Image (cartoon, one colour):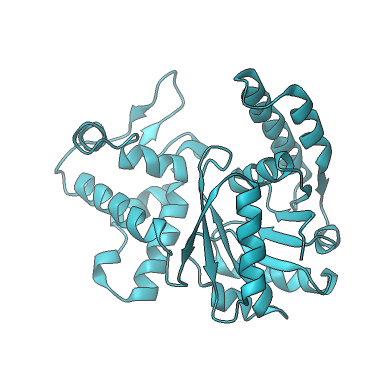
Length: 291
């Protein structure tokens, strides 16, 4: 099946990035959210990011205008149901994702492929709540979507080969690289990345090092482009905690226990860059460590 029209559910950090790359690749995009304010903010950010790409000569101004014209904002799931491929990019909470797929189901075309951009939740379990588990899979983009080259493709137990191949072809058309992952908690990237971040938080919690010394050590001693605590702020501490909870619950191993300090930051509402405070305070001209 040739995919021509893509529905993206969720206009936040991941959803607007997915809509951005899909539109630039020539797909018609329906960008859905429950909030008009979120849609307006997403379209403004997409325009800004495309303009930045054009200023660097990566795309032309004509490319920008054509891509923007392909994105249609929508507040109703019925509009999303008329697409060939749906990518759910809502918050990393299983109950929210399940409710979205259940509400979407009556509006779907028979051939529509359903996917989730989840970074950790069971694809098999999400698929089981739909009428098409064979046409359901994980489609996990990395953040920021326009920059990062990898897309994890995760098959559930029932996902058929044509569905996997169709999604693989979409990734290729985007100019990105796909990696096939098994349906285990957190898949590949976050199975490795999140415990590292969690261990960095434990290192801070136990007083082994300060925020600055931990991040500087990993950047200069391990050649990481960004320190683990800085990266956690970029991802969102609530997302990091949610993934660690999925790992801890799904694999039943104490090595995945979320650090109490990570939980404390989330309970305080200090979620990182999106709330202006996390392991760093972003309210001034330059970020300042909060511990």
